[in-house]
Amino acid sequence: MDSELVVEVAEGVATVTLNRPRARNALNATLRSALRQAMGELDADGTVRAIILTGADPAFCAGLDLKELAGSPGSLSSGFSGDGGFSGDMDLRMPIPGMSTPLIGAVNGVAITGGLELALACDFLVASEQARFADTHARVGIMPGWGLTVQLAEAIGLRRARELSATGNFLGPGPPTTGDSSTTSSDTGPAHLARALAADIAGNDPTGVVHVLDTYRIQAKTQQTELLEVESTRSAEWLRSRGPGDLEDRRKAVTQRGRGQI
Image 1 (cartoon, rainbow, N blue to C red):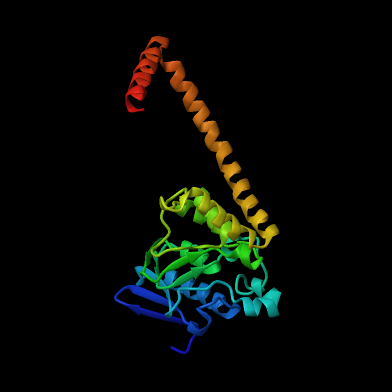
Image 2 (image 1 turned 180 degrees about the horizontal axis):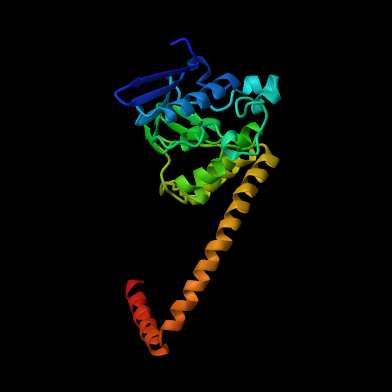
């Protein structure tokens, strides 16, 4: 497997392997371009019923090739559109184009930052015991641009997503699962965990942390405004349908039940 991207098709299933193992399958401009092209071609192939995306061991994907990016910052725009620059079409700015063929991410090792975004772009995720997930955008000093602040929040909950982005800490083994708070054992206590998280956050690029958390905040506010309007309307409709006597009876029942549980 000399190519940086290996595509194999058998019995209606295509396996796409990121093949830069020495670089932990980091996404350079060539690999990003090849990945988009291959995914588009496979999606258009009527004989392909499902696609598996994985990485050559020992990693799934370490994200953008930071060595390439440091030497040529303009390379970040390469591989997204025909002219090598960013397009107004959001689909052209993603690592994987919009597809109708089911895409399964087989995470065999670390999926970091851009690699995590790549995993989140899949329809389904399966992960080995060696799988680890981390968002180190703020630690490196770059910002998410492939949907991480939206998709990570959808995958594990907004509070946990903000924690991972602010700390750069790893999550694993196994794929991201829903959970809105960190937990600690009884012998360490929440104060110990809070100090550890604070230290992790303090070690990151401070403006990067502020920027990524503000991105989460703006998105949440935009979504919450519409959702709160729905809740407010539904709440008012419900209250108008209830009689005062019914509410009083339920209040007494709830109070009595609460006393019995304390």
